[in-house]
Length: 131
Image (tube, rainbow, N blue to C red; front, side, top):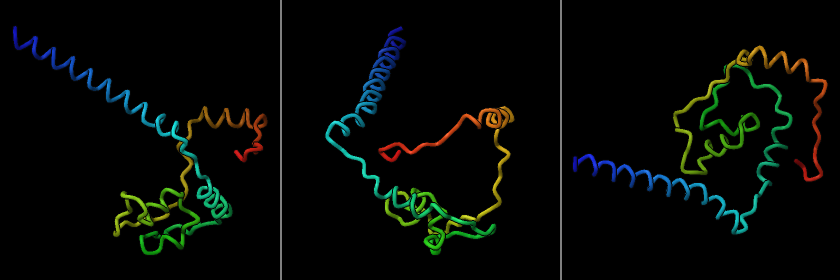
């Protein structure tokens, strides 16, 4: 009976620790924003401009750490950073990305039907702040 009580106490302590850890994880981003951290969009704006007119990349093209800059316009900004080795996480030196044909069979039938039904009601606008 004493052993069961001890296990319950440790379970309660474990839950308490998890709640404190969860609260810290939720509060950390807010603390960073409160200190005046600003967003620098220049890099993403440059990427958007550079990748605006991509063209086509041939099926079967192999993108490696040696030739990735040649295909930079086809890569998302985050992947470019991984290839460049800017951060701790990097694309392994022996990695190969092989370009395959586009596959568009993952959409639900109901999604396609509703898109066709309501597409006439949709428009895209650029807001004064560029968003």
